[in-house]
Length: 270
Length: 368
Image (tube, rainbow over all chains, first blue to last red; front, side):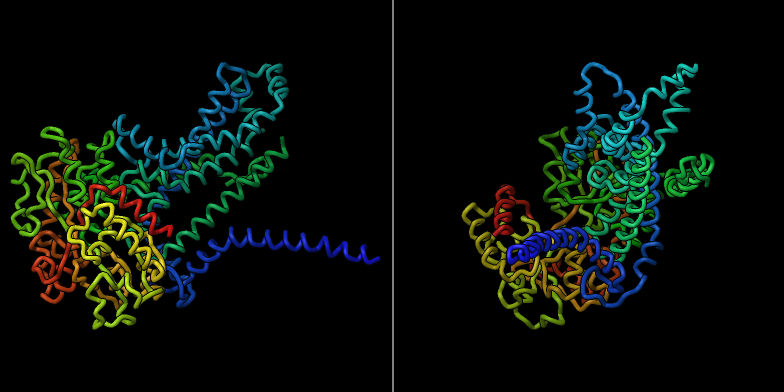
């Protein structure tokens, strides 16, 4: 009797430890974010504690700032362009990787190289490359290439499993009915892959939107949001920075959630 | 907007094109204006283009100024030296002491920058005598001209530390025990070891031997217990002082400027060992696309209109005698121009030849 009464207690201790451990992990992950959110409502002239008052004044400043607005527009347009290019290239690669070809394994590793290269090294390499090529630094020249270079391996890794699982008998059936390869791609493959493509686009967009280190090495006189935030942090006191950070986080979370949901639909559809 | 077959809300192709086109137009508007008026690409400390300085400069040269994000002198020189670096910008400004050797190259003809046509810089006549030695030349050709200068010192909160305190006259304020727990250091090997070296009586701290560096390192380690935090960015230092978390800190100029603009009761400690001063110079990379406009910009920055407003807008001080034109004597002294008259001690922030040793010592201090 005594033994059986102790058993639930013995089970409760590990469970308690596990709960405590999980709680600590969540605190570790989310406490800094919660602090930024709190500071974004601080009406004080400086970033930090003590909280002098709570209000939306810093959000109003962030939204009214023309440099924040221009940087945000730059980041959104650049993200859309980089994500579009990376998604199209990744789709082509993923479709190509369904076939056997020489050095397939080597090509795969080469596609993934930008992921394993440290960001600083990647930035320097791109800066040197553009220097030799005499390409003027700019949002639509050097930065766009840098962002596609960064997003492409992730886009490929997101799309490839979906393409790999795609039922090729559907393509064969379409071709049996007389459809040419281009028509099969347009009317069969792309519609069925659409959720995966949308998820890849959104994931690539967030990667581009958040990219900082490589961008700093190759950008000209333009500013993206991360570069603008960095210059503000380095050079001057900008009390609206936490508000800018929260707005960006919110936008990124929404996009990532949409990507996640569409990705899940894609997975369940295939 | 329309709804996709699989339930995913999507933009129609027409909507998407309209949205992208509209946003693109907004993003391109300043660029188009810049292209029409002509522009120069510069890499300079961004604070020297704070309002109203950018407007003054653009009006003087008749062109827009597009400034890249400035990181540090080391970064600027590295960018100049890297492949394609001599065509990336039309004009650059970085610290004279560090930049002069790399921009001149190993010998005549190896310069990374263009010789400056001094006839196009008539305001060079206004250059302060103090900074004439910082004009960098080789074989009668001038390559770099001082534009502005600054200094690092201790900034302290007068609500906590009275101005009559003897420690307000020395670097000791950020080392000694009196204000333990209310001190912030700057996370840079060069500046912190220079300041500590001066405080310990080293006449030429940039030439410290290995043994002297060890002595300075040991001193800093012994005083680390007094330090609240070691900050990494100017904005962080500003916040630390503004919030009252620290009462004194090793401070570059922009920190004091930000605090004063917000009405904080702060002052600069004019250290008797000498505040750490530096000058910056402008140069035109060898393959700059618009050297004529860049020359005009260098001239305009030495002119009264720009120079007299530089300190109020950025905190930095002009190398032109026109810099003090609009300031009272007291104001000029408070802002640091007293250095030029010998009223304030200063020591040039010279670059040590054995910087890697300095970095190692600083790493030891931080990890102690």
